[in-house]
Length: 187
Image 1 (tube, rainbow, N blue to C red):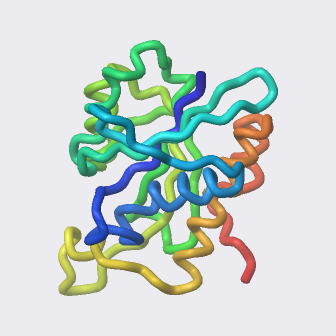
Image 2 (image 1 turned 60 degrees about the vertical axis):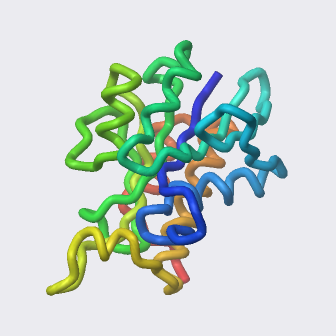
């Protein structure tokens, strides 16, 4: 089984905020494959399963808020680093740009930090969606929790969703990295 996590915060207050780009990418991917993300009783996440060739993929949105994203790891003890893909925001990338990377540290991202602590490894694939740095005088918290509505922000979400769809449909990580890393989708 392959586990795909889109990181974000639950609730309408945070919908489509910069910090929730992971949720948005996973929702777009679920819509492409015509599956619905659903919450089951006693689970701290929404999920949908899909079958591609002989592989099962589980799309997940943790509902524990970003800083505790890894708490749902206990429900997936069989998942190894090579079978985990995480989609999250990245302030060090310009808005509309994505970067796909295997392994690494949390780089100060609390959602990734929680995942690393709870899964016990950091060698998973990450799809970073650029949200840019805050403007002068704007706090990091205000920046990541504000809503980005311009076309460039949406193009980054679209680009990440297309990269994720390509991975699910069987393209290698190297092919997807070559096709999408640090590229901005043409308008």
